[in-house]
Structures are given as structure tokens and as C-alpha cells.
Amino acid sequence: MDYDGLGLKAGLEIHQQLDTKRKLFCNCPTELKNSSESTYEICRHLQVAESELGEIDKAALEESQVKRCFIYKGYDTTCLVENDEEPPGPLNPDAIDIALEIALLLGMTPVDEIHTMRKIVIDGSNTSGFQRTSFVASGGKISMGETIIHIDTLCLEEEAAQKISEDNQGVVYSLDRLGIPLVEITTSPEAKTPDQVCSIAKWIGMILRSTGKVKRGIGTIRQDINVSIAKGARIEMKGVQTLGMIEEIIEREVLRQVNLLNIRDELRDRGFKKTVGEIVDVSNLFDNIQSSIIKKPLKKDVVLAVKLPSFRGLVGREIQPGRRFFDELSDKLKRFSRGTFHTDDLPNVIGDAQIAKIRKKIGACSSDCLVLMVDEESRARYALNLAIQRANDALEGIPEETRRALPDGNSTYMRPLPGAARMYPETDVLPVQISGERLAKIKSSLPELTSERKGRYIREYGLNEDLAELIACSERSALFESIMSLGATPTLVVRTLTATLSELDKEGIPVQHLNDDHFIEVFEMVSANKMAKEGIPEVLRILANKPSKTASIASSELGLENMGKEDIEKLIIQVIEFKKGLIKERGPDALKPLMGLVMKRARGKVDGKLVSKILKEKIEEFMEV
Image: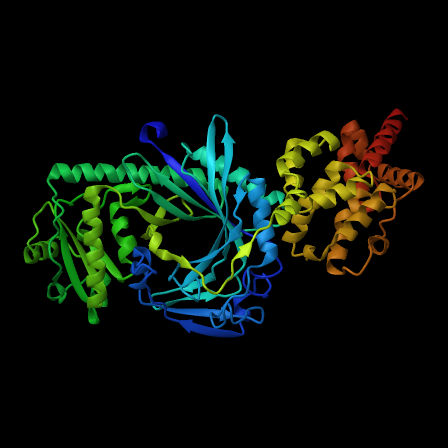
């Protein structure tokens, strides 16, 4: 796509959980529990409230129309603050220090005093009906070649509750995640291409990881993307979990906006004047209908219909791969109604004759599209009014809204864009002054950036770029440097701390029980030739299951003490004698299979390079006889 010609502008909101021991407003630990282990449940029904200026936020108002019960699972690690039955405590000072450190690394200017605000959120993700957020810093920037991307704000926030399940009756949340400290970093919408947005996200992610004070793993960092084109509208894409999806999501959002603008132009050409017919009850036309799709709900529900003038053929038009304009309607409607149909598809459900009867009853002509709702009457009527609103919006082009990113790169409607009415002061949390001494102390100990660390590892240890980046971004980079002081082989250490641990973890080995002392002792033994490097995985497997043991004891139990050169030669001679027919047949090419036999018998007691050297010599001696 010609992004420059389309006038693409994009910005980022990055949410990163901080690795503190305690939550933001209470002393509960920041650990996640298995929801099946909950010790209590509470139920809430949230209502929308006016701001201090007497305004109601439109996003909160729409959310309040979805009448649901919110059930929260609590644990022995949660308290009355998460339950919204006790006022919050002071801001976690450790979380403030981490937020300030990140701000300084981003070249931002911290505020003199941190004030906490309430942000109205009534989707159930917070028991109180609002999220607490504190403005910490502003004024940073990133240089992307000739382009400067400004970092507008950094806020310190409480993480939302984790959604476990949802149905038409309500939503179940887990309270273990609620209140974990996180930072929200917002950039100006100055990126011009999808790959530039991805580069910005990677750069900010590198800064966050450089602190060594942020949580790692799926769900601990999320990217929201603000996207617009010149003739389109600002869209906030929520919940982008991986960097690899950023470009695809932006590309598909631009495609969606281009196609919606094309539909707008065609509606104008057809003479659509933003007038939609009234909602009509057509239930009696379905008394004898044979379609199982519609017949079953009619036992307790009604069928309401509305005509969308001049929309025939447009409702079924594709706007993203696998998504049509009808999805723009149904994304809103399905939250309020259990059955939605339209006449671009209905012939496959009830037939042309039945459609003709409906058209006649509601006064629709052949160029109109009909939308039908099957549900309890008040819900169906409210949902159809949303469809009418969205159809009218189509004449303007693209409504500003918040959308949820889908795994395939498409997106679905969530709510209107929130406005200023959703924010108001938090009266239960005192302001926190940021002294010059506090900032000076943080500045004096800013961490080395992982990009700089990677370059140093390449220079000092001779690692290639891939391995250097792998260990520089790892939470075990400090351990790597400690082990390197023992004279260990750099590539062996990196692969042990990354690939080997990953393989053991996949096997179900509790690698989280391994501590730094375990690794240091293992590499001390390898460096002193007390154990072959091939025995490292087996020793780590024992230590993970029995952390109280030492590497020396584990190695002894496995019989992994290094074999002497004489013992290696004896073993090799035995293998050669046993496989002399193979050597006569394949000559030097017998080295590889014989190597496998020797290493299998040695079981990690020997260094592979030494075995290869001696085995090659012995094969040559055998062939000369």
C-alpha cells in the first residue's frame, strides 16, 4: 500500500508489568494463582457515573447497557483492597522508582509531584468500576533515522483483573492480577509505516528489559496501536500481544478504512440520505418457518426487522480478509442479541419467498438490505438501534472507536473511543513528591542498555550476533558474566542458560528451582576438567529436582567424573575391535557412527573434541595395519 499517499499515522501505547514484590496499592504479592484454587468469590453489578463536570463518558455509557453480573475469584494472596472493600494504600515506592528509571532511560522529564487519577472502566476488569493511574513523566523522543518520534507520557497504573470466562449472563475474573504495577508508555502518532511502528515497539521493549525490573512472559506486556489515515478516523487497537503481529494488524486496519471509505462513496452515489426505516415486529411471519436457526429461539423471543436503504450488496462486502461490513454491525449487536441476520445472506436460511413477505411488511424495496434480530424484545430493539446508528455512520465514513486485535490480524469492535469525562481525581491516595535527591540516586545507577550489552558481548567474548542478543536480553545475563569469569567457553554457557534450560523445561523439569550457585559450581567443575561438558544437562536435571544437592554430588551419583586419556583410549580400542568390519567397509567415514558409540558408553564422562581426536588417530592406525 502507498502509506504515504494514504496519510498513515500511527502511535503506540505500551503496557508493561513491573517486577515488584508487592502490588501498587496494597501489600499483596504479585504472583498469579490457578483460578481453581480460589478461596472465595464475590459478585458485582457496575453502574455508570457522571464525572465531576456532570458528563458521562460515552464508552462507559455503552458498556453499562450490557447488563451482566461480574464474578471475582479471590485467593489467600488477595485482600480487601482488590475487593474494593478497603481504601487503597500509598503508591508502592519500589514501583515509583522503577517507573522513574524507565522514564530517565527514555530521556523523559519526571514530574515534581505524582498525583493519582481514576479512569472509569465498567467492563468488570476492576471491582471498583475505575482504574487508578498516575502521571509520572513526559517529553521523551526516539530517533528513527531522519524521523523523530516523541514519547508523550509515562504513567504508573494498576493492572486489571484477569478474565477467565464469559457468557451472556456474566463474566468471571481472577483477582490475582488486579493491582500489579505497570507502566503505560504513549508515543505521538508520528510513525508513517507499519514496520516503523514495529521498530519503535522493539526499541521501547529493549529499554524496558534493560532495567531487569519488569516481568517477562506472555501477558506481561501488551501493545495498543493508534491508527488513522488522512480521510479516515483514529482507531485504537487494543491487546496486541506479540511484536510479530504489529505490521499485519496495521496493514489490515488501513485496508478496513480504505474499504469503508469506498462503501461511503458508493452510498453517496446511490443517494443514501442517512434515513433508516422504523423497527418492525415480523414475528408472525415466522410462525410456520422450517429453519432450525430461527425457529428455535422463537419459542420465547421475537423477530424484529429494520431496512437499511440502498445497502443491498454492501452489507456482505468484504472489508478485511474473512470479514464483511456486516461484521461491523454484528460486532456491536452480538453483545445484546443472540441472533442476527441480513438479507444478503438470508436466502440461504429462509428462502426468497419469505424475504419478499418481510420486505412487503416493512416497506422495503429491492435496493434495501434488511437486518433481523431474534431475541427478547427490549434487547433486540436496543441492538437494532445500534445497527441503525452504525449504518448512518457509514455515510460519514469511519467512526472513531476502540477495537480488539484478533489473532489473524483483523480486529473487532469493543467500544467508542473514551473521552475526557472518564478521568477524575483519586481522593484516597496522597500525592508523592519526587525530590532531586531521589532522581539523582536513580540516575547514578542507570542500567546498561541491552543493545549496548549485546555489542560488548560480541567484542569481549566473540559471540555471534544471535547468541549475543539472546543472552544480553536474558534475565540471566548477570549470571552469564559471573560464569565467564571462571574461564568457561562463551557459546557453551549461552546455550546452557538458554537452549538447554528450555529443553529441560519442556520435559517438565522444574528449572525454576535452579539457582546461580548451581550453575557456577557446574561450570567450575567443567573448567577444572572434573566433569565433561556433555554431562551438564544430566547434572542440571538432578539439581532441579533436588536443589539441596551440589553439582559435585550429582556428578558423582551419575558417575560423570572425567575419564583419563588412558581410559578413553582403552574404550576406543574396544569399540574399534568390535566394529572393525565397519572400518574396513567405510574407512574414515566410520568416524561418525563410532563416535556415537563411544560417547554413548562414556555417558558424559569425556570431552567430545578429545574423543574425536583420539578416535580419528586410532582409525588411521587400524587402516595402516
